[in-house]
Image (cartoon, rainbow, N blue to C red):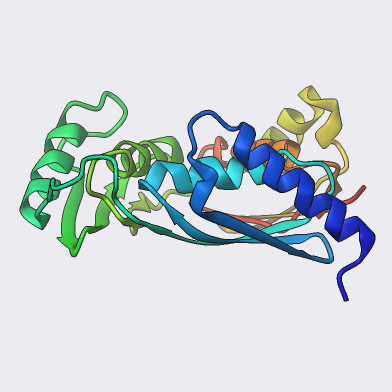
Length: 219
């Protein structure tokens, strides 16, 4: 049964979606159960999917987001983008990106869905490749299969991450588990902004190749 809190949360989520200027929320529906928001419907492009998820996470009381939106291109009626067009645009965009090492990423496109493969040194490079390609016209989705160069994690990687958390006092309660170059974060934080900040801090540690962010909302 939907609780009163879920009803209020649904109203707040819909209001926030309508308030977000980078998003046309006319075709989006939101349902809520026990604080978990499910988004369905369609948006005009892939970046709008991100905008919708970010908007929902800003709403107080949201414990999780299930994003089931589809991309329905309607921004340029009659315009079609072939897989070759998208692949060419993606390749040129990556070549011009200062944060993606030259010739480090390979691109495949099938029915508007882009797959990125290759190896880079840092998570910010991997994320940048994903971001710039996702904002191209005609892209329906992106599978980011780029891996990080295997390196021996710094012996003091735990202390470096914990020191980063201490510099942001709100993150001191997060527990850090290390297995080789893989990091797992556990604990509770009051909002998604702090959860994302904890994950980013872990990724910034030298030698880290995987971050499993198990932090959850604790109000």
